[in-house]
Structures are given as structure tokens and as C-alpha cells.
Length: 447
Image: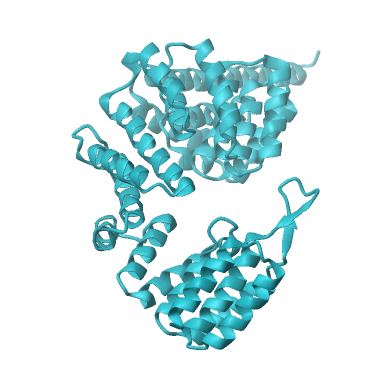
């Protein structure tokens, strides 16, 4: 071997040793910052690793820095650390951390990209499938979320995280029965999980399952505060109001109002519960024809909470305004409710077109009333499909529009026209008792 060759070999060995020593020194520095973070000095550790990454661009340093930033909830900083990196450049640990950071920062498309890359590179990564499911749920991609949860269940079984995600999916997709089942099974696995017990309780009272809610309170008394128990009383009042609307029993509305007042006056009621109870009180007052109180409370709540009232409260307010002889104000509310949800205009149980037409008539704006009625009449056939879609049944709105047609003629003073139209309806349906009641009213008006 020549002297020159030996010199080259020595230089190569020396360079290799220097690289090894440099890498060892880098790893030692990186580990020292990680240890500092474990000891609670998270800010200092992040600053140190940030400087080290800026100096070296090392991927291992980047992975540790991402993990610490996500741990410190610096989600956007973690996502912006390496703008030139592609998903292939990140480790599996970093993909999981960045997926979580993007989801919690509201960047769901980026989160989906990270989680998809993670599950593609490691199909056995539980957090990858779970994160993918949660990201799809939050984007309202329920079928994709269900698919991801099925893949998770196939590999890891029904874990606590799986039950939580199932309940979350059911809640977001407005499937209370599925949510009830998922939370019940979760509690059977974790009988001391107070958060799940309280969630199941709230769901039970929302669904009107009073006995189930009371059983939860009896079985897990320590999981509930006095404020929690007030929610059961509130939902009792709401149930009474719904029953009163379907049965037209005023006494039930009065009982509901008493319950609502008790909830509002309770020192244990949290602000959110008081707000909901006050909104429902407007509805109860309007149903009891206590119109001045209903309008005054609605006006106070609008100022107190700084924004528009919920639509169901606005509708009750419009009813109160009609009862107070202020049809123009009522008409504006009814028209805006229809504009925001056109399907309610022809609702079979409570068509908002009817309220709007009455408001026009009360304001003596008969042309607008007739124009609205003509639009409604054109959309209503004599019969409609039942809920199974297999047979035709009478359309209640068809009868409503023809009754209103008669009434509008009478209100305008065209009593002869109204009488002729009514006689034609009675000829087609002589057994219809409501038509005979209208004929009696019309005859009384004509003396």
C-alpha cells in the first residue's frame, strides 16, 4: 500500500469518526431538552429544540419539537414548523401528532391528509383510524366516519375510545337512540365515568325518558349536582308543553309555566338552563293568551342576550303580537320564519302560511292575503302520500286553504261570494262538521 493511499484511508476514518461524534452530540442535546420537558420545563425545552432544529434541520429534532408543541397546545405552530415538508417526510409519531393538531385547530382537510397517510403506512395504528373517524365526524362525513370506526373495531375491538367515538357520531348525526345505546354500553364498561353518566342523563331527559334519568340519579348520586337535577325538572316542563300543544289542554301549559318559573328562580340553575327556561316561558305565556307578558319578556330577552331569538320563540312572539292587535309586526316575523325555512310554510300540523294570512287579514291587507293564499292553494293537492309512501290519504292543508278562501271573502265584505263558495264545499263534503260551523258563523254575520 502506498503512502498516499494510507493517508486517504486515515482521512476517511477521521471524517467518519467526526460525523459519528457530531451525531452523538446532537442526539445528546436533543435528549437533554426532552428530559427538561418531562421535568415540567416545557417552554424552555421548546425554545431549545427550536434553536437546535433551526441550526441542524434534523428530522429527529423536528419530531420531538412537534410532539412538545402539540402537548403544549401550540397547534398552528406545530403545523407551520416545516413548510417545505411533505407527508412522506414525517415519522409515524409526527403524523399522529400533526393530525391531532390540525383537527383541534379546525383544519380538517389537513388532519384528514395526515391521518390517511398514517393509516396507509401503518394499518395497525389505532390512533390513526380513530383520528380519521373523528375528523370525518366533524366534517359531517358520517358514512366515512362509520367506515373508519368499523376498521378500528375489526382490529382493536370495542375499546373505550371506540364507544366514545360511536356516541359522538350518533350525537352529531342526530341519532339519539344510537347515542343512547353507545353511552349505556360505555357506562357498563366504566361505571365510574361520571362524564359519561352525566351525558347519558342529559340524553335521557331530552328524550323524555324520565324513569331512566331518575334511575341514573339514584344509582350514581355522587355524579349529579343540584344543577344537574334541575335539568330534569326543566325537561318535565317542556314535555308538559308538548303534550298541551297536541291535546289542546290549557291546564298543562299552566303547569309547565309553574315548573319553568321554579327552575328560573332556583339558585342552583346555571345560566344556560335559565336562558332556555326563559325562552320556553315566552312560548307558555303566548299559549295561555297572556300576550302582554309574552311580548314584554321576549323584548327583554332580545336585549339581554344581544341577538335574535330562536325561531320557535319568535313564532310565539308573533302569536302574542297578533293577539295584541299588532298584525303588521306579527306579519314580518311570520314572513321571515317562512323565508328561513320554507318547508314550514306548508307543515301539516302547523302551516305558517295560515298564520301569515291571518296577520294580513287582521291588518286589512286583503290583496296580500289572497296572493299568499293563491300561492299556497296551487301547491296543495286534495290528497297526499302517507308516511309509508304506499297509499294516498286526505291532505289537511287542502281543507285549510278552502276554508280560508271562504273566510277571506267574508272578511272583505263579499258575503254572498263567501256563501256560494261554502255551499259548493258542503255539496262536495256534506259530512264535514267544520264546514257547517263556518256556515253557522257566516249566517250569524249576515244576521
